[in-house]
Image 1 (cartoon, rainbow, N blue to C red):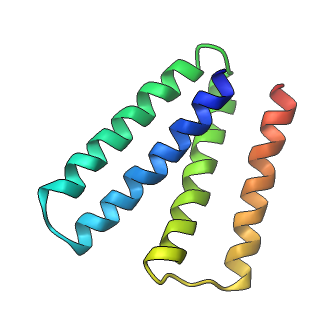
Image 2: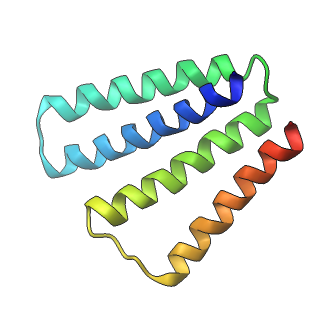
Length: 105
């Protein structure tokens, strides 16, 4: 259960980052409110997951999901570079994140 919660926390972090970018594009209160909800929920779920999963592993997985998710959101929705080098780096982060899950069990 803790791993599922950690994955959801990572997705909420990605959502929070997307809302930060959305605020830069559209200066209104909605992106800020969604940013606070996204990151707040993400941190609460991260804390819950860390009751079972080692801190270093949980934080690395949470951050990895956020990095990959934020990069993909930027590429898909905000026209950021889709170069093969960037995609290879995303793949390496994803493999390392999955590796941590497999090692931690």
